[in-house]
Image (cartoon, rainbow, N blue to C red):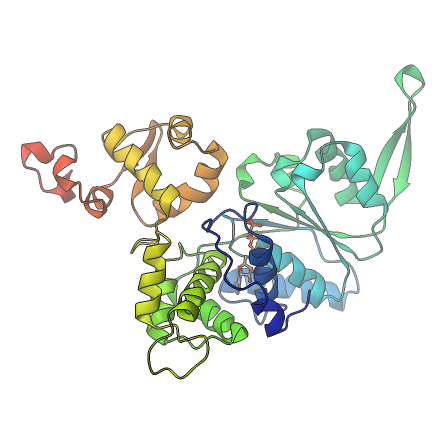
Length: 366
Ligand SMILES: Nc1ncnc2c1ncn2[C@@H]1O[C@H](COP(=O)(O)OP(=O)(O)OP(=O)(O)O)[C@@H](O)[C@H]1O
């Protein structure tokens, strides 16, 4: 994909309300996202520990002239797993094949991919926890011995024919590392757990994206977006684009710049329009919190009940919504379900309805 500014700018002013789901993102959003992907570990912002570990792994492989060990990237969506897989291929000058767990529903799907890999190729399997069990078992042997056994024929006459594969590096990505069977997890030479980004790192991501977009953005404008993007670069970049739209439509007076300037006023107005609150909660986050607080009196609420109540997949709640709500201290996970914290009651202006409030307890003591 080309990385020129004109390519990035060609998808102007499409309106996309979804800020978290990559599947539902418009084509223009995906093109925009792709154009902003860092191409090297040096350009990749944050995740310092993981970057250092990956750098070591790739350099050692290069010095020994072998394919790097298999790598598992775990963490919530939008933190850079696909980007890192591309960097692993790019840094080593290796070709990259991309697939995903849901696309591998039979061992034959995987055999077709594995048998056509060229030596040294990087195979990226996104959502690897959703691959069919039969394919998973084929992958064990492929990862360990670069070999698979293909079954020929059926019933009593079936025989297994070994097939040697070209050496390759598997990069698996998952939002649910806990769902991977141990034999698969153990075959990765390195597992990276990606963390949410802090605000300083997100400001760097945003400054880079603004410069690639040719957008004149104030430091305080970027800092405001950084505080509202759920610790996630993908959301940071999408919010920046909405802010750019706003600045285009409402150019700041006297800026003298075509397309306007992204200042604090533009950021606040754009984020209000798109329903992103001061903590970065979007509509789904708020719907989840409202259910916990008002329908279940603060909890505990089980994951499935929560998912049904907001009309979402339990997996989306668990992988996308919950980690962020836990991280910013609005809910805690207990063995009996999700429970709202005092901070949640306060954030939603419901402190007087919190359990114990009627007895006059201060909210922090609840
Ligand atoms: N560390 C980073 N520095 C700069 N930009 C980043 C970084 N991490 C992610 N991004 C940006 O965020 C966007 C989303 O990243 P990416 O697609 O790699 O996330 P992901 O973890 O693979 O998400 P998913 O699990 O949904 O596939 C990319 O366009 C990329 O530009």
